[in-house]
Amino acid sequence: MHHSSRFIDRHFWVAVCIIFVVLFVPMMFREWLSLRSEGLSNVEWYTSSLTSQLRRDLESRHSLIDTLSQLDNRERFVEFDLHVIQKIGHLGLFKVRIYDSSGTMVYDVEEDLVGRTFPKNSSMKMALDGEVVSRIIDRNEYFEEYGQEINVDMAEVYMPIVSESDGSIPYVLEAYYDYSPITSRTHRFLIKSTLSLLITTLVVLALLIYLYRGRQRLGRKLEALEAILPICMYCKKIHLEKTGEPDQWVEIEAYFARQEDLSFSHGICQDCLQKHHSGSKAAQKIPGDK
Image (tube, rainbow, N blue to C red; front, side):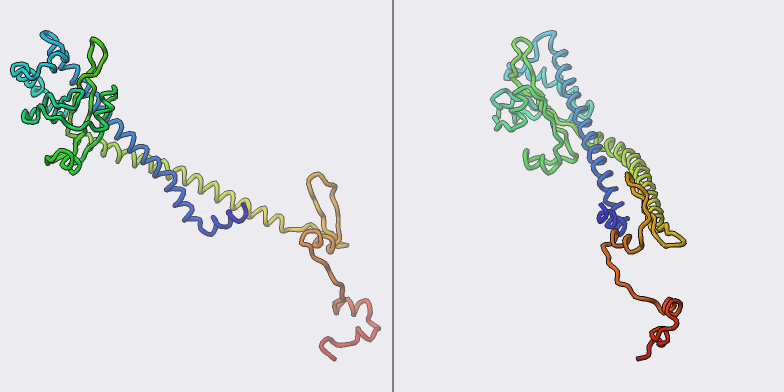
């Protein structure tokens, strides 16, 4: 602990920067993930609403499942296509595709793609298992997967269409949304969150610095107090105080032998030599003479 404390003292501001990064970066990353998840949840909710609207619009004549099973009929296709086109652009909806359980496309605004069978990707498989799957797909990814260029980043959602009669999932609806408005809103919230978290982190950091500096000052005071040895003004014995032990007055030699593991050899200074042995030849010898 003592060595680590000395290291922090020597590299105090480096330690402060490390603490700032450790506190701030994970919070910002978590906030970004939260906003991203919220945006995708909104898109999933829009897609669920789209599916409900299609059910409601068609239920007067046929169920949604029956309509999708008969889209090879030109009249049914045109009727269904009209309902979908009315919703294109609503809430950022860009494109709708519907596949059956084998991966064959039964509906697309671009009719030339209808009837083609596509390999079932992981999202399609999860949707056929009853999960709603969403992701953000940028322009490059979209071009690589579908060979089409787009001007905005998209949100892609796979929504299972559940049969109300037996609970099976014969179809999957794939919807694409313009994610730009959600991205812009996310950026605005992220900027606000960044400022808020930055202020909070700086306040916490300032408090930690204040407490640490206070601890340093207290430590220096304790060191100064510990450096003052109570010593008898007459016999020069040192007073020892230890918790759980009786007070002791020990000789200077004994104190340093105990504290520092030192031993002493004895001599006599020139003043004491003159005082106590003034008549001896040693006392008359001038220091430095040989």
